[in-house]
Image 1 (tube, rainbow, N blue to C red):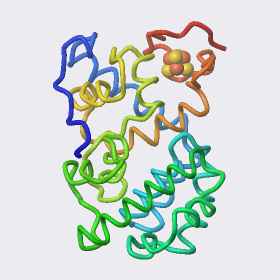
Image 2 (image 1 turned 90 degrees about the vertical axis):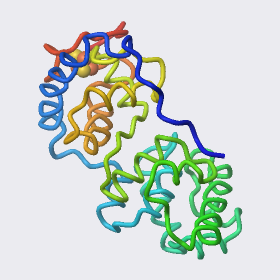
Image 3 (image 1 turned 60 degrees about the vertical axis):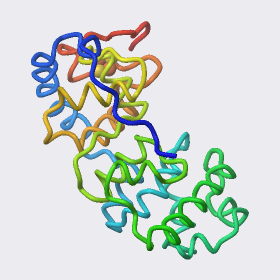
Length: 237
Ligand code: SF4
């Protein structure tokens, strides 16, 4: 079954209006980019840069859910050292995959998902990862976040991967007012200049791990505090 389609934009998701939201994002993105300069890229981005393999991006994204970045990098490395194509991973048992990706969170569930994905790509799709949102959403267990990451990092195609950091920071800034990542994706697709689509995930992930952290963000040291409405922030440093 295909995953959820892009939600139709609602005006309340862009409380500043589209023009002002775009202007705010134009100011914020370069400042965030400067703030995270020198930080380590997320593991999935590193894997994408090293391998240029949409399949490895897909599998490591599955591993990365609710898992620390170092663990994702190491677990992906162990799995790919043993098997790195849809056909070779499909030939492994769930147990073997689970042992290779342990201690990633939910490693047993992920092992099942990775095997199912690999089988589907190997045997139904001739070994090729789909390069469209629709095609990716047809894969078992693939949602919009994963599909966007495969499109952007795996294929260099336009997309906005909205994970928990992108969703939280966009709302705190006040450029969007949305209830979930799917709404944030629609709002950002309307307001974020296209040249920032691919990079926004990496930038906000690194910024969200270091400055605009989930609990008690470091607002006093934040380079974009003057552009930020700090919506929903109850406690900060
Ligand atoms: S001012 Fe605070 S809430 Fe706003 S982006 Fe910076 S750290 Fe996050």
